[in-house]
Length: 396
Image (tube, rainbow, N blue to C red; front, side, top):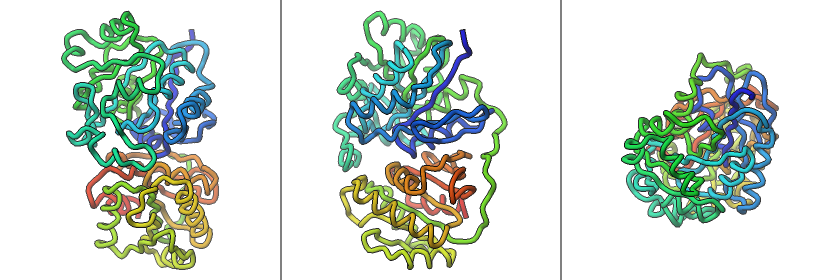
């Protein structure tokens, strides 16, 4: 038998960065790469399948591809980052992950208590409100119609799913819960969790078989502790860039929280906020050369935050501005936006260094013309109004 292995995959770029940061400190360098990223002896690679907006069959194919190098010997863990607002085709991707690694069961722990995301009675809540009654219900690409986690998974899965409350976990223990589910023909167990301690409790006493663990940063931190993953942090492996130039923010998210953070930034700082549909590259470059915070954003009030046309325009304009005046640092808001922008720069790997705020990640670009540049990614749907300004201060 071989050693226990681990593979980590996520369905979008900011999610991949979030999980990577949750695995720190680590005895190995933690790197975010693409779907075919090659593992390194000194690094744990978190692979981004960028599959949240794909059709179910395409999403499943990307997951299988990302797990094509799962060892044939030994047992292990697949950490499958899912969207905790339940966007995307969760069931199809879980099926693919379980098929790829030969796992008989998946344990889904979707809570991120520090970000107000909890699972209670099998229902996913954001600050106490079912996610299908929040702005996620109006997501332009993945509108959320059901807050029941097991039912959402079952809608695109060929496996049975069930929810298990904390009272049952504490009465019987996780090994007994999983064993009973297996006897009943249930392959996907969704666990309630309201605190980080709840998440840790789910992982203590779990059996040694290969399993798919699906969740987000809360799960990753709990797994890191249970797996004794913590150690002295490793360096990012990239040399720092010169400190000249301004800071470039690119925000394509249509979520009201993200728009509020941009408004706060514009009101509080000498930030140049430019609608991409009216952007002048020379003006953007001039602002960056002057050391200003330059924000390239989608049109105010737009309803196609993840549309291909808008993302392509954001990415193209960003690449042209960077070519004219390389920034000292970048902040990318929204997973689809981050993926499109980095795609225009050749999809460089990111060496993840930490999480300065919930669901925000600081990294260093490892490849290409921006190698050594600090970069922050954040989701467009989280944080108080001052969050974006705080993250800019992080990379100044």
